[in-house]
Length: 519
Image (cartoon, rainbow, N blue to C red; front, side):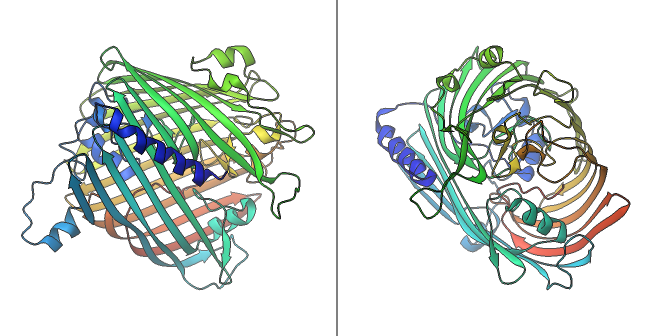
């Protein structure tokens, strides 16, 4: 049974259950960086029942009335066409027991590569992205929330992204690609999940989506960097919302084929991961979370497919780690801590620590700070991330902390030290952002998480610097529909060579999901 069919069954089950469940509403907070910036400026993260360190998060625990694009728009629009362009969803349908919203997804971007010293494809035609799709949100009664979107893309990418695709067979943040024309790619992505809240203290989610655990730009525990995947989870809130507990299980895969069977194309090698997250807000300005994940063995190259391990259903945090330890040769366990403290109204500190083994060089940590609304318009961010060379890697090469050949946590995988600085300007509908990233990598190849810890070879140090400057006008905050343009400069120094990429871009898009190209 395919993943899309499974997601369809979950949707049907949720609709059948809707008439018999009687209370509480559920929506999901958006995960994209622009919407999160608006929420943090409005202080949503300080609301006592909202545990902001894990996404998707429920809006039933938050007051979004002061958040542009999520709360009510009090602006007077004299024509229906201007209301649709600047405020509303494309299609809005409301009847007793049903709210339906439909929006287009698009990204039409044109650019040019000024310098390309990385890709073997020289003298190429101009860069472009051509994305088309749709997004549908629905609330059934006061209990069930449904979300789905689909997008198809053809793109000619910058040189360093082109090398990434050649190396790993996937586009960053997406799945596998097909060749398009002579030097471009064709790829698509479908998301969807169902949420059910039978009571104020209990909710369920299931579908095909991404997750994020953290308060910063990156996460060393679990991020939305990789392609989406099937998952199921439940969330429990206790003690008037001060304590929240999540259990989730997801299906992942390595892009290596199973032995050839009767089918013309074998399935990929599967693995599944369970994770538990316990968060505590003693006061609204402080949030601390404890994380545990286990990547369970599902396939062995000698013994073939392995039976499902019932311990993956254990809902108690740290029990599996206590039984398996952090150096189990078959099941890759990891633990971590997630922390945030809003010291002042406009100043927020956050941190993470992760541990992936009992041996040295298997941990990582994050330190970051954000300052909001300087002159009521400018935000500053500074973040440091570090992961040891053997973090996220398993003795069994099939059990690395990855999905579809991409890291499930930080885009750089393991063996790096990174600084990220951002300056963001947002006033009314004008948005500008400058980002600087510098990283030192100690590894050979672009896929350390796909190898065995015993085989992983460390190589010469690589230095990467990434600068991106962007300016946009946001027509509609509900979908972040915007006209935008920018310039990117990326330098990579390896073994004395300076490999540079420079390109500019202009486009029109909706911005609903993050896409990380700063690696």
